[in-house]
Length: 232
Length: 256
Image 1: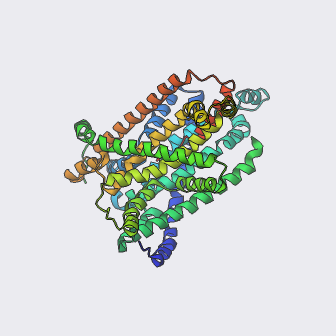
Image 2 (image 1 turned 45 degrees about the vertical axis):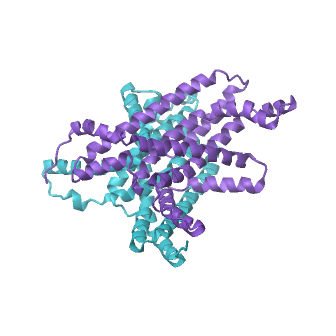
Image 3 (image 1 turned 135 degrees about the vertical axis):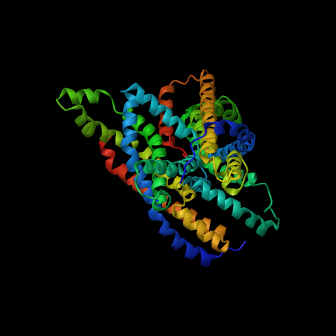
């Protein structure tokens, strides 16, 4: 087996042009998913039984089905659904040509991340003794203030390893965004691979890029954990 | 452009056709789980051993595998392995069943995930029990086999169940290398209908996966309940806690 190292070197540089897209999907999905997941988690612990039931069903469904299928389903469903809505509203807008597929990717990965984050947030919130909420309220803080200043900082530290895990998995999972014609690392690699049939080289490059990305993310979270460990 | 309405009837009528190919999906999944567990056990043993180089290699392998997207692994194995085998053994395996490549790729990934679970579970069993067994004359192998392993297995069970579900979900990717499993068949049905019924077919596949996941979760829950009866170590609560923390980290698992 002979690897074409010149090609590998060139493609390796090329693949980094896909990294911003991969990171955009990852970061935007995490940011969008966090508030929803927090709301679900709060309701799972104490609160509206209906919301709790819905969130449980949702988490079970998302965690019980492969993300490829979630991608394939939403990518067939969303554009036509949006088209129907837009036509009903009477707006002149061609959804099939004018929407960057990265938005569909962000929707899919946000929906997926909500389910994973809910579980992490729930166990993190449960790790804070409930007496702290009562103590906060009894000294005159509002419930909201107690959450923001006392409970969330502590819960966040407990949740960090879980969030790190989700981020790494999100980066890995976003490699499937090429199914939605998003030009992320994997898609750039695939295009480079099919051009001259250098499959092995291109995918080995992609493998290296993901390895480096995940290492950076894990180091960053390890740093954050050291920094915020004081709140524990 | 006219949009066809969602046809729930197709979801039901496609199910029997899709279920016909469930055995291939399960074959890939179960083979990877069995082989991956064996390799994972070996990796856990390497990571627990005193041997420095072995230890380091296992750690490196686990780290690399945890950073690799399954699809990249799958493609590397699918394109790389035949070339490698051809170069080393001068054997042509290009025409081998695609399921074999899928099983190899998922075995490599699964072994890394479960080795960490096995290792943590083994560490959670009080090590004094091993020494106690040796001191009353049981052989090291016997002490491991009859005393440590059963307890390790029970502690590892919940996380192992999680990993099994995750692997089954990742197995859904096998269609990307052209394996005709359940999703592969689904794509064929969609192609036969000139691209129509995508939503219905994918939904049908999702329902099958969802039911399988729930079933596996329940099965592992029952198994755990049954096996847990014999567990009576004094610091049980503490040990459970330790494994529970691991489970949180693993909550997302290989959440693909």
